Length: 187
Length: 187
DNA sequence: TCACTCATGTAATTGGTTACATGATTAG
DNA sequence: CTAATCATGTAACCAATTACATGAGTGA
Image (cartoon, rainbow over all chains, first blue to last red; front, side, top):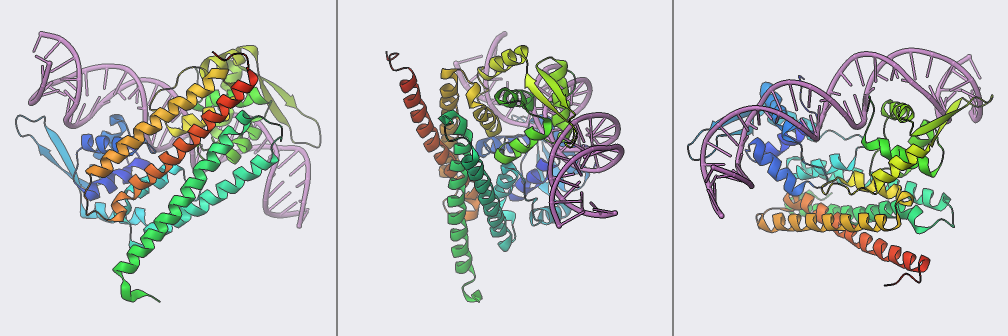
């Protein structure tokens, strides 16, 4: 295992599966679409790349062309591809935080066909369960409590509801997509 | 500073401001409404309480009545109250994660009157900015890319939109509330 | 020449988890 | 009498941040 990261380790691997990138590229990319997951700092990103390299999951090319600052781009090796596949199609811990869900969502392309839908369906179950918990807490709380007391509950419920709506629509669209791709496969 | 936590440190302090609780109580409470922030483990919770105690921000009572397992309940001291006020009315870092926002939302009661609305307004700005970034990335990406490539973007946009709607409604309700409470204060 | 972005890295520290250890009380 | 829940704690470990250090290229 050596030193380094774990959560981001496979996420980075997944990003490199889509295209070859440098550490700096990864940072910029994650910053742009990662407001829900938070971009890793260089202090964790570079060491993570080094350990992936040590483990032979990625390989590197140094670009030292002049009139550009030198950079190193990383890409997956065959063992890296296998490690990623194994990781991504593995069921996630039921109480995984939002962050983990979104990280996998960003790697959507790397899922096996059924895997992605399973991931969304599992998330849906989780969110619905949380919704139920929040509603229960809300109904158990003081009737005369002021708005401020319920704010967080209300917020949680609003986000959960929005997420369920989105998940349903995404699941629907994905199933349409798979019907299109496998028209003869209908049971 | 000693060992212990930091993010959760003040959050715990805020919970104790609402009512006296034991470590176990805190865990249960946070688990029930904290799906967006994640409950701290006992391994961080108890040490955090110990350091709050050392710093004289909380005080403790041991309840060793028989036919109940012994427990310790914590409550704020005056210095604790001051530390909390100082912390909560302090502006948060602009790129703070969702978790930080929600933690403060749970502590809504502890805000100075204007502080809470400022907090929501600041969050709104942040979310709108993220929305703009995501839309930009979306429009810059391949037109022929399949649904899977846009899933995370789409998810982010859906959540952001829902959050803005909620924030607007909450801000509106809070301003109604403050009008009610200070009817003569209108400029 | 000064500041800014691009680009890579390391060391110290921190915030937090996991696993472990203990014990009382309650329900089957 | 055994399992589950209530209840508190410690030690080892880990992931990740912050701060630091370096250097090339670009534009004012």
